[in-house]
Amino acid sequence: MAKVLMTGNAAIAEAAIRAGCQCYFGYPITPQTELTEYMAANLSRRPGCTFIQAESEIAAINMVLGASVTGARAMTSSSSPGMSLKQEAISYMAASQLPAVIVNMSRGGPGLGSIAAAQSDYFQSTRGGGHGDYRTIVLAPSSVQELADETHTAFDLADKYSIPVILLGDGMLGQMMEPVEFKHEAPAVPPVRPGGLRGATGRPSRFIRSFTSNPAELEELNWSLYRRYQQIQEKETSCEKFMTDDAQLIVTAFGIAARIARGAITNARALGMKVGMFRPVTLWPFPKDQLKELSKTAKYFLDFEMNMGQMIDDVKLSLEGSGDVTFYGRPGGVIPTSSEVLRVITRLYYQKGLNG
Amino acid sequence: MLIKTIFAGFGGQGVLSMGLNLAQAAMIENRHVTYLPAYGAEVRGGTANCTVSISDEEIASPVASSPTFVVAMNQPSMIRFQNRLQSGGIFFLNSSLITEQVSRGDLEIVNVAANTLAEEMGNVKSANMIMLGAFIKKSNILHIDSVIEGLNVALKGNKKLITINTDALKKGYDLL
Image 1: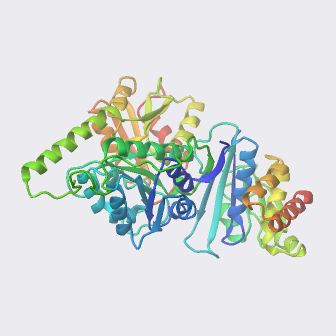
Image 2: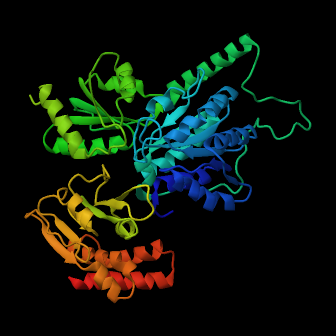
Image 3: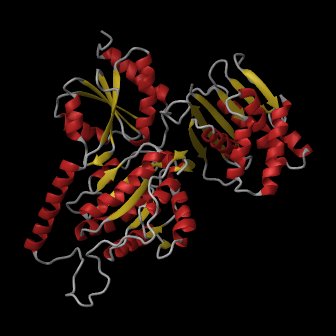
């Protein structure tokens, strides 16, 4: 298929349809409304598929839970304040072992914040977000093409491990346009996951629920989730390394911040500075071994985020004291430029005596 | 070569469509391109701008700290973006709405009376396309035919709109 120029939001929606998403439930919020709009125009026309603009974010995510119970591929999307509202149901889905894809095109916070792009939902996304001992897989693409590709991955991982998957973008990725190519055709009939509840005719009845009054049973549920999370941590980490081979200073960044950092690094290289970048694509599981490996050749790390410093915790935990980590960030929906990050890199490079 | 352009004006002037058409044309010419819109919560009357980056290589940041070109469709945009342009950059001004002088001396100024010309053509809304035509001619980054081809995609084959926009585009292109 030829490339098309699309917003990140529309690309996710189109990719979801092609991944066999049967049910989409959403509630509009800037900067992700184009995703809901695209689904309204396109998913609702597909045979057997359901689009509902819910009365609230809470209703939308509970509709996703209900659709997932039946074995359908289900999805919702929102932005930061809306994501906070969805956390209760995400916790219920984690406990009920229900797959779903939940998109967060995050914006400035806390509170109602602003409609500008920000990355301050890292903690909420990677630490479970709701109550209870659980995790969700978190994917953080950094281009429109990757948003489309990772949407597909998100549905596959959700089904593979029966857990909710968060696709974490931001207002900029959602609203910017880039050429994108879709590698899959939409299935003629949406896939149905075995084990869903679609009537018990001819078989014993089954339950999908998150409540049990038996502590031993609940403990076992927690341990079984724990084992699954361990398996995910072993198998599903993904990251991108850029010019790290001879780098003395490594910038760690995710999502759109990594694009801005990349521009700065290219310019730093042109000035003769040995700088590289480490970008986790999976924020949970965090690719900690791959990052630790880099500390064998590089001693200095600059963590750059569009927040007050959240991923830096995972960077430090991964390095286990084997790197010197500095932070630079811009919270509140301010969009930093590559030249700003270049100034920070240059200052640090000289402060640490890396210029030889 | 990486070329970044900012289009700025107030909401309703078609500032985002200018950028979008340029981006679409760049894709038609198989270039790497990013289009980044920025606007307020208002529907009309607020400020709007977008950044289009065009390159032969993969584009890192879609944000422009010092663009090569800036197109200002109204006075507040001219004031806001005049210090962002890189030295030697080209500043396209909608002289129908901008009366104040640019305070920097190291820029090339291109005045286009976009609103006046659009009114003469009978549709003030096409001022953006007149400006885009002039921009394509002067900047020389893409072929005008690609922009016209892109218009067909953007306007989904609506013949009436395509004619109005193409005429305006050519009008601007032939000005310089």
